[in-house]
Image 1 (cartoon, helix red, strand yellow):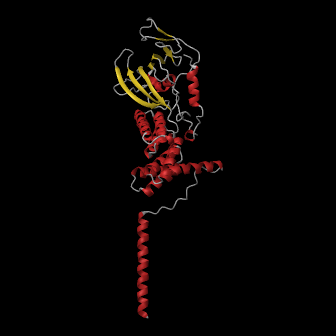
Image 2 (cartoon, one colour):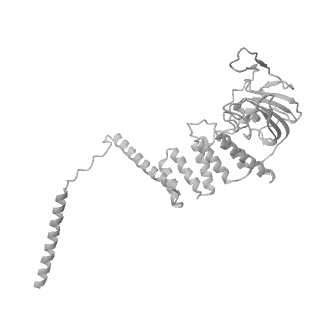
Image 3 (cartoon, one colour):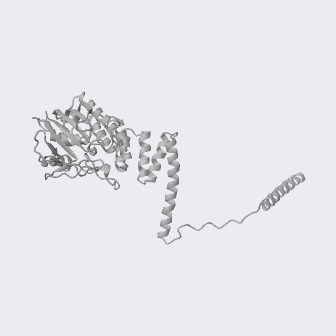
Length: 378
C-alpha cells in the first residue's frame, strides 16, 4: 500500500494546529500536549516500502521469521502501515464506499482478540468520530484507510491500544492486540450548530464519558481532547472543571489558568475555581496573586479550611520572599544585606524593678498625704 496516502492524511490533520494560548510559556512540557492530535509515541512515517519480520520470543533466535511484504490493498495480505511492523492491517472483505476523513461519524462493528487465533474478548457495534481520541489510537490510524463496507484485521502493538496499563482484567499491560473492524457506514455531521437536538447531546455525552474513561486511566491529554470536543456539542460547566483538573494533573499551568478564567467569567463566585486559580498561581511562582485568590476565597467562604492553610503558608512565603528581595536590593547598593540591629537596651534586674516600683509607690503616697494636709489648712 502506498503510505503517501497516510502521510497526506496526517498532514491534513495537523495543518492549522497552533500553539494555543493554553500552552504558551510552558517550558517544562511538550508543546503538543494539548494540540488537536498527539501522535508523539508513533514512529516516523516512511514513504519507502520496508519488509519487517515479526520474530518469535527472544530466547529462540534461530526460529524462522515471518516476512511481511508491503501490498497495495490486496485482500488477505498484511499491510505494514507504519513501515516498522508495529501496526499492520489485512483486508478480509473489500469495501466499495468512501474513506472517512477526520471528524466523520462512523458506525463500526469492533472485535478484540488477545491472540491472532484466540477467543474474542470484546464484540460490539458502536459509533465514533474518526481521529478524535474516542477509542484506541489504532482505530484512529486505520479507519481513514478503510472504505465503507470493508472488514479488516488489525495487529497492533500495545502503544496504539491500551499501553503499559492494559484494560482492567480484559487486556494485560504491554500486550499486543488484534482487532477486527467492519466499517458499516460513515456520515459527515456538518456544522455542529446545525445538528438536530437529539443528536447533539447524545454525541456530546458520549465524548464526555470517554473523556472520563481516559481521565480515570491517567491519560490526561486524551481526556482533555474528549472534554473539549464534548463542549462543542453541549454546554456543561462540569466539562470545564474536568478539563481544568486534567490540565492540572499534566501540570500545564498556563493552560489551566486560561480554563479557570473561562469558568470564572461565567460564575465569578465559584469557590472551587477561585481556589484552583490560587493553586495555579502558586505553582507558577506568583505568590502575591496566589495569596490574593486564597484571601478572596475566605472573604466569600470564611470556613474553607484548605484556603485557611494556604493563606498561612503563602503569608509566610511572601514574607520570606520580601526579605530576600530587600537583601538583594541592599547588596546591589553596596549596603550590608541585613540592616544593623538596634542598640541594646540596658538590662534591669528583678530587684531593681522591685525597688523602683516601691519608690514610685512611696512618692505617690507622700504626695497624696501632702495634698490632704494642705487642704485642711484652707
